Image (cartoon, rainbow, N blue to C red):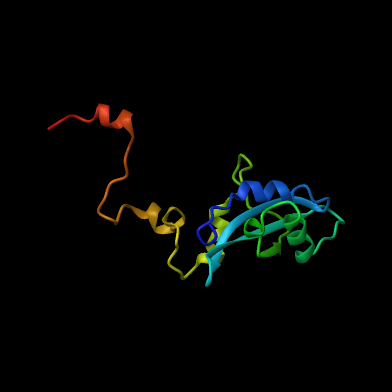
Length: 134
């Protein structure tokens, strides 16, 4: 989400992966004073490859609507992954959202620490059928 526009991380990642220097990428929302959130790209370059932040942003701008393009690029040695190879975006987000109220509650670390909102998450139709009526 950037302003009132939805931005698909997957769409931006696919475009960045078409750049010849990019080996891996993760795009995630980071706080922005004007727009609420803006896309940020975390990029791992191929061995011996070179690319700069401006080059990668321009690569996106030539292929995507400008509001979908990363506002910044950070270069990493590797992306954290689960045992099955999935990128741990939650871990990557923590650095940028630490000490802030998140705009998107689904990324709030407190969510996993028990339900403090006073509401219960909808368990879905199967759980409703299994629950006894009182």
